[in-house]
Amino acid sequence: MLQKPKGTYDIYGDKALTYLYFRKIAKALMDKYNAKFIETPIFESSELFHRGVGETTDIVSKETYDFKDRGDRNLTLRPEGTAGIVRCFIENKLYVENLPLKTWYLGPMFRYERPQAGRYREFYQFGVEAFGSNDPMMDAEIIGMACNLFKILGLKGVSVNINTLGDKESRENYRKALLDYFKPYLNDLCEDCQRRYEKNPLRILDCKVDSSNEIMKDAPKILDYLNEESKKHFDKVKEYLDAMNIDYKVNPNIVRGLDYYTHTVFEVQADIKGFGAQSTLAAGGRYDHLVEFIGGPSVPGVGFALGLERLFLALDAEKIDIREVVCPDVYIFSAGENQKTNVLALANDLRMAGFNTEVDYDSKNFKSNFKRADKVMAKYIIIIGEEEVNTKILTVKNNETKEEYKVELDKLIEFLDEKIGDEDED
Ligand code: HAM
Image 1 (cartoon, protein in one colour):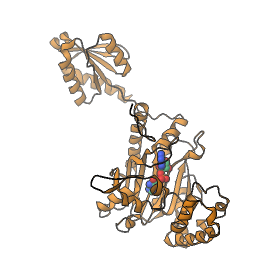
Image 2 (tube, rainbow, N blue to C red):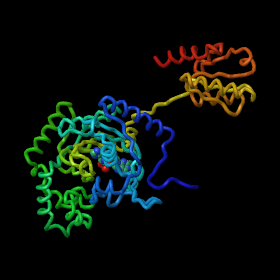
Image 3 (tube, protein in one colour):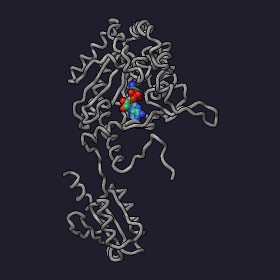
Image 4 (cartoon, rainbow, N blue to C red):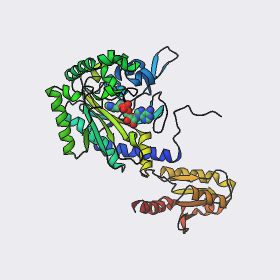
């Protein structure tokens, strides 16, 4: 039997209901922030990610799905959403009339990682990218957005780890300090870090292999290398987070696995039973030069993304059920083979009038039809036989109370509106 590729999964049943409900909640919250939905291609030119995410990052150097198409173009399945949104922002000149602009997206991303709980090769990210303001207010608003999403979903103990990478000048000073510090230890670092030392020493701090190495503990901290401007920005972000009652902690070890960040970087956590290291649910930061770097004007940005898989594991662990079960309002079946035309025509009318309607296709007996109506949890049942067609009077049965009503065909929609409308208002 053919099977799905390693590190992928199917979305069906309960998972599909959870996924759809999450989309609904996320959209409703995004509307509250006046954030606009954007969908970008699942594959883009490889160059976009190599430039945007950074050559020295693990994502680009080890995890991208790169391929050539039949026209010999170098393409990559998107490993994250930010670079594509920035490309779309530039290519469609969204900066001309729309700034400041908040955008959001939801879709599959691809990274060739070792699959484990909450970590897949095809995974879904919900993300936000906001453009057009240097003000720390935007950093804080975006962090608040991520926290609010988790709170709305019912997660407890939502808190943020924040750090700053400072502006270009601060980062350059810090880079020099790191080069000086790691120089005598170069041979103690893993091969990747020796390469990172040359290209981007900040990445060494993010290395999974060397993270337990003693020399990491005393490595210089960015907070000691910030210039006044960067310090001010970071202080303001904290002040705004305080104003929104957001629980945060400064963690100087957060450098994040992507190259584009400046100033604020953050990770959002929640208290999840039995989760430990996986309690990070969302991550993001400010990227003041990415738009320019990818070929656009100088427009600053801030954003975050969360993985749906980890979020759903967290909701499961906390026994939070966000499925939205949708059932048919009406189940119609035919008493006999020759009423199928009438069944289908009535179902069509009811659906166009706004009722969820399910039909029987196989003219099974009454018993199996009642059984199926129960299984799909239909609210009302209508049986169409010769008599109903001749008299144009239908028997409509409430499938819960078992009450039966005689309803004229012409008045059916009015009847259902009254009955089902009433229930929906309860
Ligand atoms: P990231 O930290 O690489 O950032 O990913 C964000 C989130 O995506 C992670 O916190 C995690 O929940 C989820 N994630 C990442 N890899 C996997 C995987 N293999 N399986 C399941 N979930 C995963 C970014 O992607 C940035 N684009 C975030 C951002 C947006 N920064 C600014 N704007």
